[in-house]
Amino acid sequence: MSPNPFFGPNLKLLRARRGRSQEEVAVGLDVKRSSWSGYENGSAEPPLDLLVRISGYFKVSLDKLLKDDLTQLSESQLGILERGGDVDLSGRRLRVLATTVDRDDRENIELVNEKAKAGYALGYADPEYINVLPAFQMPFLSRDRKYRTFQISGDSMPPVSEGSWVTGEYVQNWQTIRDGQPYIIITKEDGIVFKVVYNQLKTSGGLLLCSTNPAYQPYEVPISEVFEVWKFVHFISHELPEPNLSRDELSRSVVDLRKEVGQLRMTLEKQGRLAL
Image (cartoon, rainbow, N blue to C red; front, side, top):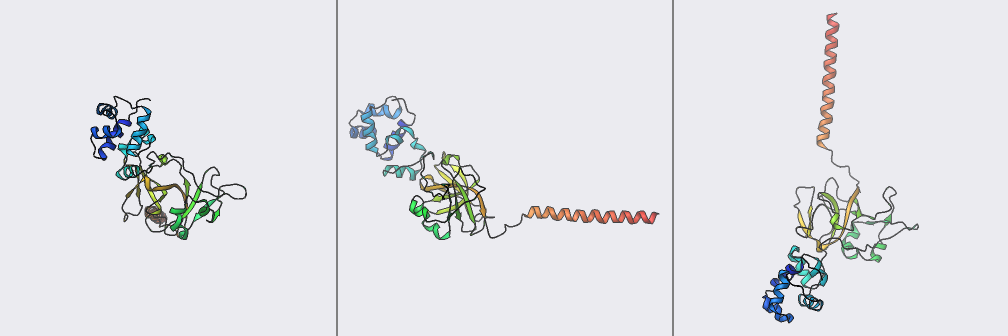
């Protein structure tokens, strides 16, 4: 077994969270206290059979103990681990997406309307649930990528108005989430949300969700509560977006300037005729 930079700090963290001394853990695992101290500070490595016992003692998988830096996990993520759950800190885990295809075996774009939104957070991984959603094709989108369209509620993301249809491209690797870009996030607590996202996986193990409407405060979602991520592609709305005031002001300025130039030209021509 090769030295691992995470193993020692992980052991120290898990022991401290249980409020136990090195002597107490050593007795519980039937090893010498000096040996346990060596495991925590990285000067010694336990044999395979002891690794298995350590995993069972702390109820954390060997994979997590050896490959992940548990000191970077949030309190909620650590709680999930200690209750026997699993946490994807990296955001790179392979995710299986329930989907549908048309007669030509092309990926459909499923439509999640306002009525279906309530059950999506529960049925997103259920092929039977996905299969009953309305489906269609958009020929101008890539056939090599997976898309889904969601109906958006609320006024937190202007110029996208309430009731608009937002299409997203499925994101497999959450590490590729780009700061300041709009995404559709499927969460355990809030269901389907459309927000500008900031990737904080490496710092806090979550995503910071922001609105374009300043009346709504940003908030963070632990990655353990995220089910799916869809990158914004386009939206369809029955309402025209609010006009860009700065562009309108510029247009008015150009019109006014043209009027002034025209009046000046007429004045000069009039003066020229009088001089003759």
